[in-house]
Length: 452
Image (cartoon, rainbow, N blue to C red; front, side, top):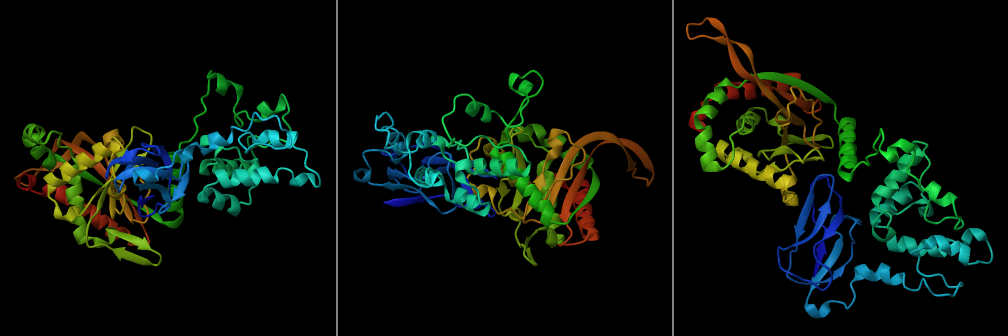
């Protein structure tokens, strides 16, 4: 029998939300077969089973947010499988509801009816407590319990939107936000009485005008989990890191000459196009050798300078969020190998096929905003790194070129900006500028034909 735990999903990730189980209790599971899907602020990924056998127990249901390392399921022998799946227990609990006995309320599937049908002698404030206690034990994950305790929230005021009415982390955060903004929160499931009309009115969308519901002029779009958590991490990054910003303009004519010569043969042999990104990545990797403090992470009062380059490449997920897969030990790879790996990681990122290990532990990040058309981007640093480079759009424009005889002329070249946000705790502007100038020099003067 083997415990299935929530794996480490990144250096800064402490929890994940189970979004889907691919197996149910009693199903046979093969080793390395996808078992469940988990969502964090960094990745939505399928997690394979580390063991073969039969899924005998599921301890974390879809919608539950659990900490890293928590046991969420058990895989054992077929004889160990229970006759009834644990996930079906809330449904079974609802069975007593039709009983005519008014003095014995059922399990709190419809807890709003309990105060009205169950007269409790003594202090009326104690009446909801038995139901509330049972409901909390059944619905609150450890993360939700911690949030509730930290903010001193009465769980009877929360409306659970998870499976079976579970109170999710998002429910608590939404409640906290509504209180902080002075907006009335949705009516709790424990209403004082099953009143006819007012109760539905209280559950209407908060502060949403009537036209938003009809779709005439406005549309209310609820922020997704990845949007909320991305925002939280960006706010944290700006709060802890003194961001500074530097830019250089790069003439890509030297790169373009080589790309033009090999692009057809490259596409035929590799199966994908040769973009500017592998050239930029290779130049960044080599420049980090001369400016190692950019290839570092902050740990308290210490700067941890890495002797390897795990290069993160930000990938857009069809405008729904960003994922940063990592090219491991990039300093050991030449341009062709880097291009292959970037193409593979980006493709699997868009298909949500990356493993947690492939999106954690980067030492330097490149955000390829130029592919979307931006000309100057100030990216926010991916903590705990100390810099992030944005590769902006490459466009043809007039530039001054030096002639073989020493004179100058005007030429039309592909030109683009390399913009870098960096942590002023780690180094100063001259160091950051020196790094960018080195990257520029490599792109403009290196013999890329020999590299390929």
